[in-house]
Length: 312
Ligand code: CP
Image 1 (cartoon, helix red, strand yellow):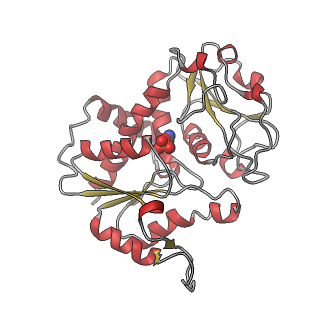
Image 2 (cartoon, rainbow, N blue to C red):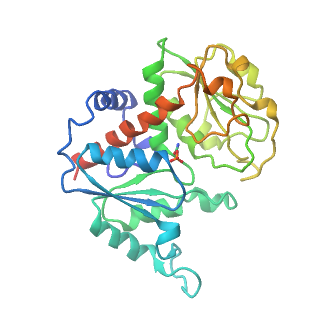
């Protein structure tokens, strides 16, 4: 593995999960692996968990993390080739990525989609430009279409909490006041498709994710039907994929309630809007795995960094 930019970079999810559990049991075991190695974390968008857990993972491996808020603090970066740069962008990605590669042994990037231009978002312009022009491994800290550190985290959390050999896992859309990306839902779907689980998706009409992602995963437009016998309910809002980036539904009946999920465990990547996406009565009980999930972000990132460091 040269880069970690997609769930599809995971060759064997079961062995990755087992290794992550070993890291979690002894997080400082490889504290010299990253000695004198630098992780650069470049944020084009906001973050709490990804920013802190990925730094924590680097520190556990003995790496030195350095962080930059690219959108606020760096020169405006141009990604188009052949552009006459007489507008707002001051530096081309060809130079920027090459320069950062001299300071960092691994580069991690967060760059959200526009949600206005499906073709451009699906081209993963920012992530792929770093992969092309950086001379060091690149880690996806959430791109236009994927959040593979989160997806790996979620797979680890389900494995840790499963009470039956093949649990039923439901990914459910829930309402939100803003148009949100598909990245978390996409990577969660890809991770579940690699695991030995019964996996279904519940979302309103007009909210089906990309068929390139869902493939043959069953999609229900009736949440109650989808939740029947669920062991895990993973909730996330996403904007319409068909009517790209639009909010077509705000029906509060899709909010997750204790009555709906019963004994199933509740999961969400966070941040979550209380009493819009999920009611307090779910988050404030043992039903919720969200804090445990956020903890596992460190070990998922540490596993990825370990694998990349071992190849340097
Ligand atoms: N789940 C997640 O990626 O959280 P942040 O946006 O806070 O990093």
